[in-house]
Amino acid sequence: MSNNDPKDGPKKGTETDAVAAVASQSPSVHDDLLAELDDVEANTDSGFDINDMMRKAAEIETEENLESISDADLAAKQAADAAGNKADASASSEDLTYGDIVWGQFRKNKVALAALWALVGLIALAVYSPLLASNQPFLWNQGEGMSSPWVSSLFDRNFFENPVDIFFNLLMVLGTPMLAVWLWRIKQLGTTDLTKRARRRKLRSEALILSGTVVAIFVGMLLFPSSSKYVKYPQLLEQLTEAGTDVTAVFPPSRNTARETGFMSASPPTWSRLFRSHERAGDDRPLFQHILGTDESTRDVAVRILYGVRISLTIGVIAVSIYIFIGIVLGATAGYFGGRVDLIIQRLIEIMMSVPAFFVILTIVAFIEKRSIFHIMVILGLIRWTGVARLVRGEFLRLRNLEFVTAAKALGYPERRIIFEQVLPNALGPVLVAATFGVAACILIEASLSFLGLGDLTAPSWGQMIQEGYSTGAWHLILTPGFAIFVTVSALNLVGEGLRDATDPRLRQ
Image (tube, rainbow, N blue to C red):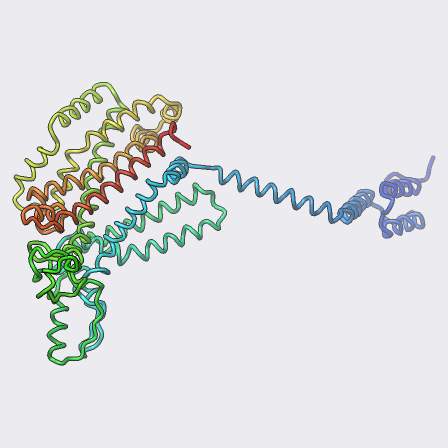
């Protein structure tokens, strides 16, 4: 029998052969491993762990393999990684939403794009009207310290009587910095790792918060109006100058307001006397004091045209918003449920369409004693919803049997969620197109009502100016507001046609 007990550990031959086998697996094993082999052969009683030796050999082989990688291999690997990143970015850029597709098609229509920029310009004129025309100076100092009557007048109900002006002034004061912040957020989120859809959801939520803040402040201003003494600073400046008082005043380009009177009645543009030599004598007014003349009530036409943009756009947008809301609710209900619900709503639509809308509006407006532009907005919104309801109903009839609606029902979604979260977003394309045409139509209807004397007499309406020109025979009171209506309505119609073509798959380029 052998004197070696298995409990005493591996034999010398076994230890030596195992270490040699481990070393032979790599021709360039580290010197420390060879030294440890010599120690094993010299002292058979020393402790030895074959697993530890195998682990050391594997680590050495890994280090040598890494060192053997050439610079060319590293460059190839980096190029492959860059190509993969580029492919991921390309895939992300190809993640187009329906809005991306429509906008891409819309931009190819140069006429519609130019009309859109024209509308942006009109909106900018509406928002920043006080910067161009106001009788309140930006800065005023008559020896008692510098002040800014222009800023304090923006929300003064003695100066701006119409709530529409208060809202646009609030957009100018708060909307401008909010828009700048929102644009900065767009740029900032573009540098993050968020996907395009996630970024847009975040931007939409932030835009809703900013819009809600503006609306809340506007409602507070309506509930708690402020007013102060109305001062005509241009006349005060003349009086103080004649009295020898040193006054510092900085005014907007035009020192007139939409309701300020005291000029020549129904006077043509001051520059037009250059072409009528018989009118030059006795007319000492500055050449560009009234570049579009004055109306029958001696008010500046150019300033009234400028502030009339606010009235026209507000009536169009709010009236369309009212009847689009009504049309979407009724059309979605009829198209989704069908049956008796659809039958009842269809009969209601037919009844409303059987009556001439304009004569209904004339009749309702005639019964209102003190008319305002808000009455006109509500009446237009309550009368013109039938077209939108029919469009939405048709889209819901087409979409309600598709697979995604069936899947939503199978998941147990409530009917309200299916209608307004699943089906409605896919049915809004025709509604947006109809909205642009609707704004143009409402502007024309409001101008027609004002021309007939049924509009808001306190608002600078373009139709009211045309009526004054018709009654007095003043050419500039017909051409100027008529051209303003033509430009605005044409721009809206061109944008509507561009959207219609962009949302039609058969016309995509």
